[in-house]
Length: 224
Image (tube, rainbow, N blue to C red; front, side, top):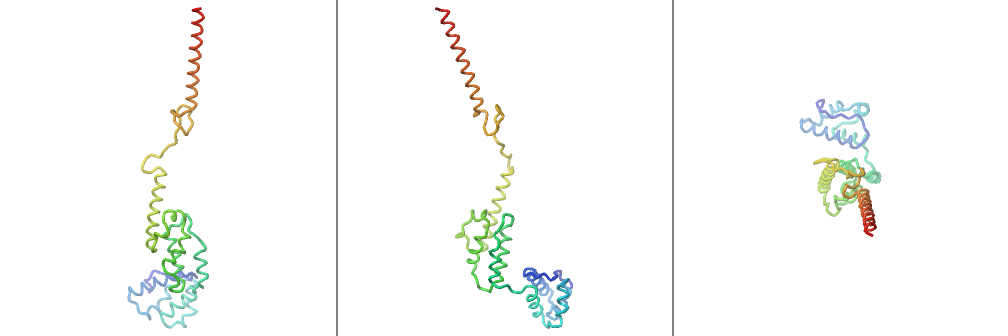
């Protein structure tokens, strides 16, 4: 058992306990270690609080199955369903958490409920309302029939959002620059649409017309 890389320090958290037990059981199976030898060597995998705890109860544990059960009972006691439901609905997905990680966390909570409590489609119903709007606006609940569908659509949406963000930042070509008028130097329009230029040109034409009118009057007076 000393070659097993997983260790347990005594965290009172169901996920940490399950991770440790899964690692130990996998190693035990692959190395074909008997229950008796596993029980003798499991102390090598405990550190800190877990090591002290094991020293205190070691004589009471006679089988490998007993070891697994007392470990769960002490460090990961089963939560009552109402507390699990509270944890499921206590937090919605934030903008920085990927959909895959969010779903993994929620499904881990559902797994702690009594077996058969909720079918997969009911679990999706309960989770869907907690998913961030940036995902929900691109996928309808009716289009999702399984968690596999949900995760696949989530990956597609994340790729689409990443591509849109890349393009908006100037990727795949020059970033679009705001219009700037070369006449008045203001942004938001071009020289062809510049009102100041049009007004100035209009003023110039009016002045020319006035000059021409004055010349006509002079010529007429001279003729008289």
